[in-house]
Amino acid sequence: MKIAIVGAGVSGLTAAHYLQRSHQVVLFEGERQPGGHTHTVDVMEGERPVPVDTGFIVFNTKTYPGFVRLLGELGVAWSRSDMSLSVRSERRNFEYSSRGLAGLFAQPWRAFSPRHWRMARDILRFYREAEELLAPGEEQPLGEWLRDRRYSDAFIEDHFIPLVRAVWSSNRARAEAFPARFLARFFANHGFLQLRNAPPWLSIPGGSRTYVRAILAGLNAEVRLGEPVRSVRRDNGTVTLRFDATEPETFDHVIFACHSDQALRLLEDPSPTEQALLGAIPYQANEVALHIDERLMPTRRFAWASWNAHLDADETDGACLTYWMNRLQPLEAKRNYFVTLNRTDQIRPDRVLYTKRFDHPIFSVHSAAAQSRHRELIGHRASSYCGAYWGNGFHEDGVQSALRVVEAIGAERQILDSARGNRGRWNAASAENSPRPRDASPGVQRVA
Ligand SMILES: Cc1cc2nc3c(=O)[nH]c(=O)nc-3n(C[C@H](O)[C@H](O)[C@H](O)COP(=O)(O)OP(=O)(O)OC[C@H]3O[C@@H](n4cnc5c(N)ncnc54)[C@H](O)[C@@H]3O)c2cc1C
Image: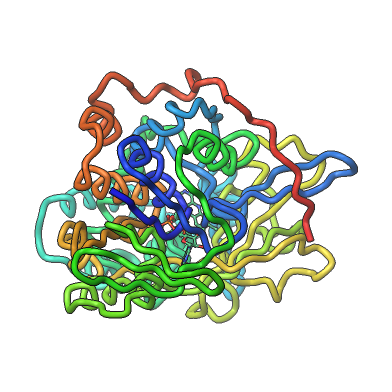
């Protein structure tokens, strides 16, 4: 079959990687740089480039079986990262981190605050009780679920809502509307419900673009970068793609590996099912800034963590999350580098190194219902859809959604079995056993 793939993020790259073996694949990417949300930027320290990730950063061997399998096939190495969280509220002069007692009591007087202890007690309670949400049942918005069970304000305001906002870059109202079961599944999958033996988090030396380059280097497919698809028409079992400058092209099948809203806009004749399912999972814009301004971090060093949620004076405003990149990536760097979402205006302009817009899916009770119908849009009118929005919005969700499409179109069963759950020949290795990289040396892209 001649297959067009629209989008070279992790979903499109995964689909291309597996389908190229038995099909003629053409991969279209609107931007000149492949990778989508996998976006590494070189910052120059003198003559030496420091490859800092501004999009996708971390994963683990337990809940990313498909992605880890892909890295293994490509010979891309990984190394230990760190998953710690801090919360800072400017309005309430409040900050703590999950990095041990020193982090929890970064403000030492909190040891005498009943509210702080209530938060700590409810954190332990939540990670016990959330397991009940793993059983199938009706969805309920998160805020309602927490209040029905009389969780303390301290837990909701000072821990849980900031955590959800930080992980999904969503504002407060959206965080409260999150489907509670969906969230519990995410927490369980990522080992957050296990207080002991949680899987170690990992990142890719040289930046996450290392795996994008490895996929492209081994791809027996035509890759068209900087060539956005402008519209897609389906007629009598064939698909026609239109572009800005070049002639329309016809394919047997199209895989939309872009976002749900982008795919819907491309369709000249969306079916009612496409309109209903893609329309139920909208996206929101987020601006990401790579910078060196420490003022975006908690004021006390003990409260610094890998993920830093910042609630400013108006706590109902959009999410602000700052990643401390030196703790997340194995950077050999002289300076601290930070990536902050949605607060570029608060960063000193002379400390901003790079900015970019990334859109995140918005999850709700409606989107959860649409996600459960993904298979209806695989092989639907010579079209299939994949993307992280079909799951929790993470890299593994992109890989798994692509594997569902690959499986339906027809590829080697064995590959899929092992990628799905480490059941095959290849098992996810421990961090210490990560394969040697084929080429971990980052190329240089100077920051504009
Ligand atoms: C700041 C940030 C940090 C993150 N950190 C993590 C993390 O640590 N771990 C994790 O698991 N996940 C993380 N994520 C989420 C994860 O990286 C993404 O959800 C995932 O990479 C999305 O993959 P995708 O293939 O669905 O979409 P994308 O990566 O967005 O790819 C879609 C591609 O389609 C292209 N496209 C769109 N329209 C067209 C068109 N008309 N023609 C041609 N091409 C088109 C786009 O240019 C894009 O390259 C992070 C995301 C962000 C923004």
